[in-house]
Length: 637
Image (cartoon, rainbow, N blue to C red; front, side, top):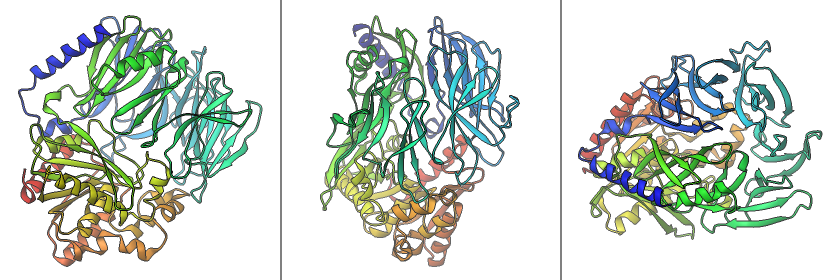
């Protein structure tokens, strides 16, 4: 790895040499300049999505000299959002469009095909398809690039319906003509397929209208679906087939444990434990083209990797890369058909993302592109993991980000994540880095109810949105105070979505702790979730809320910030998108009306044409500047 380490040392030197200017709010608000770099199967060309005044364009470069061959510019009706190489010449890409009502492009479910030189460009599937088949109202997404077939792919197809009641299917698509053939229809509406190594749909995991899981199985391409198991979440989750197709890798957890990786023999029904962490579930399954599955990524504190087959070339390459980038996360985005070249994406707390071309024979790395080249590592802050025990014995994980060169008596922003069924990871976080650059310490906490720490940990948050989840957030805030990092008299809480809910709910529960609260696209009146927003539009939406929130309306009201502003001492900043379909704007209005009624101080920032999180850069800049002014006023950096 000598060549690789030398190149990395030179890259680090360049980063340090260019760090004279302080990073600005505008720098953090910018979208990535480059992203999703992939190499063609023959290695002769690279494709990359590039930001062009807020809209992505798809560029094709010669690998040899990095000179552009063709650049596909976006129009407001056809915006490339993701893509895959299908052959040495052909690329299939998904599109979004500017519908006028929103700043962020909205996915259309359409697939387009194009050659790397710009030739043979046409829509392949979707509402504007001219294939002769009535496809209006269908959404498509790529599932499998078929081996030894440069003209066809397998795609997931589903009719657009707000309640999600249509049965999806796997179809075989011609990437030149758009002609399609149904391969297999799903046995139920909401769910996903797992295909074997030959592209045959073998498992289907689905969600019932009453928010229960079912798993279906078929033994070959001639068989029909049979019910395999019910209530499988955390107990039997198939993720990939073994190389010989006789086994399937599954995620499984016992009572009160994390999920482990098992190899399940389909014929015998026996399973063998390959790896389990006592701290966290596997985050991702590692696979690469024809090499198949070779490992899993873990995120206990920092990203680590468990390789299931150390003899595979891609596993050896990934292992070497993981040891060469100072602990940063390494993702292999693509590889050539012969495995001699791979593109790796490297990112970390002080690295917003860089792409490297790896020569696997020489084990050398060539820097390709930086996603945000204007951000320099030396200007960004370190993020350190911590682990706490709650009074009732739960293990609570989180991350602490500190301003460079400062570690004591700092103003603190507590930043709970959204979801609540999600989690924070170590890595570059735009909000945390922006706040740290302005002198604030930032605490992120994976409270009970977060995913990634076992089924029991997630379910411990059910019906406790406003109680024990908030206690875990308080525990993390007090940790920063007790270790001397934070000034106990200068603590604010800020979050988005469920994090926005937590910002207000925690400020109500802990009026002596928080000096201000910032709710961004939050929910503030829990019974309203049944009537406003897009959760209710899913057939399983009501059952999901009954299960995770609890169907006792009096309990919902008792945990709703908009109903208890009389207990609030902290001044509030409310930030929302007027066209938010997840956390409907009515939540912000309900909170504002309650604050007005009590005469409680608050500030208000609502933007038209924004949804569940701002997209337009100038709106993000305005939000950040408003937030910093608010924080400086109440806890001062």
